[in-house]
Image 1: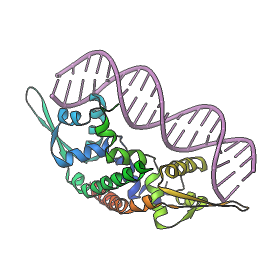
Image 2 (image 1 turned 30 degrees about the vertical axis):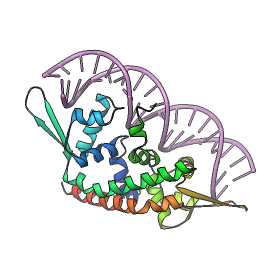
Image 3 (image 1 turned 135 degrees about the vertical axis):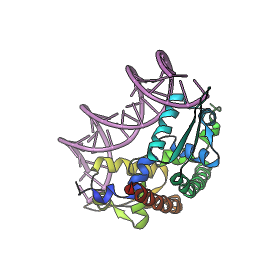
Length: 110
Length: 110
DNA sequence: CGGAATCCCGCTTGATACTG
DNA sequence: CAGTATCAAGCGGGATTCCG
């Protein structure tokens, strides 16, 4: 099993798995700007259903990238924010964001 | 169709699609270090079959992130390298790489 | 309001085999 | 050596429905 070590232990492999979710980048971005409740987040991602968002959030929570804070009250209220690890990702996110913008410029031209 | 504009035009959405391939990050990373032939690349990704690598490369080429240079000779020789756009992605890649390393440290501890 | 369980569908991955 | 074609299998996203 150590024949694959070179790749399994590779940071890129890790990143790939962590951010593989279709909405992971967007979620991390929005939460980077501010703490949000479930429904607030959903409103920002207007293509997304309840269920899908819930799954993505759970995955990110289990990975330790976001924090889920639940208030014991009626009606229920849950807030999501970036964990310490998640916050450290922000510079990379910003960098990707800028590059994405450049890509769009390039390709819209042709 | 313009009700989704806000998200379709988002750089993160673009990045997500571009780098969605399971091996995209690794490939971009290796090609960032040096121009490589098909088989050289495959050897570095020792889990990967011909077919899969070929598909990933084709996708990245069509996206305009890598350049495919073919030499008309026997036996065939094809070299892959980063396009201009691909090179601009490198800083982001490095940033992600470092973060991935930190993540591994954090999580291996617990 | 927030979340979980189910089912369905499509896409990507990966194995295998075949061309030039 | 490089690439394509085909096909099977697995996974993830999305819609729906039901709980607290």
